[in-house]
Length: 251
Image 1 (cartoon, rainbow, N blue to C red):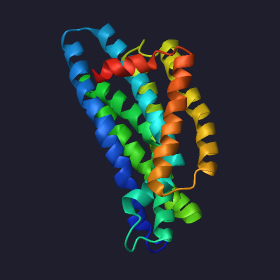
Image 2 (image 1 turned 90 degrees about the vertical axis):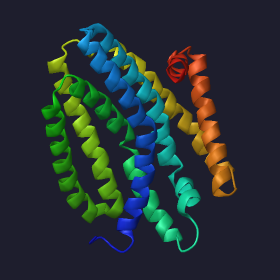
Image 3 (image 1 turned 45 degrees about the vertical axis):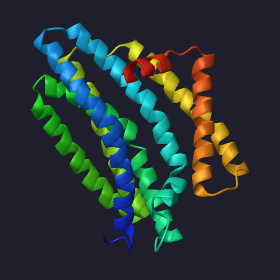
């Protein structure tokens, strides 16, 4: 509250978009995964648990990386469509835009953390989840205090994302001690293409952004459509099976 008028509201508006994405996509997937992980452990099917964990992690990264990039690149239009009316000024749009970008960067790391947490909960290692949560809060508080003085509302939002990143790293290390062979090179091989193709697809999006002159809704629809089309074409051309796994998951 000490960094200026309107910043707390901007954080609230930006955080609402972020938590909506988290609730609709990540939490629903995690709810299903916890049931699967618990059933596998009850039946002593550790290999099935590991296989499901790896495929789910790859799938979530496949979904969340493009969403993260779209939220960052199209944040201004998202904010204008959701809030840009009435007394919501251009300054308010800019502040909320900064908050949304800061939060959006952490969506992938939060998704990874949450999926790993489902394994800990299924293993009844709740204390690990609690410790990670406390560490994340402490990191978040310290970074928010430091970064808010330098880069304002964006610093507070990005402090969340950095905290999610660090907790995700801690969780990746900790789960290896609980399940020795849970990580393998195949996990990286399935994740890396999604990351590469996402950032390749940003290039035509940025090019189109300079050409299109329309209202916020048309901007968002046209540029998002261009990005998604390029992303899907990249997967098809390289014969990547991520789309097939995604369709199977939806079914």
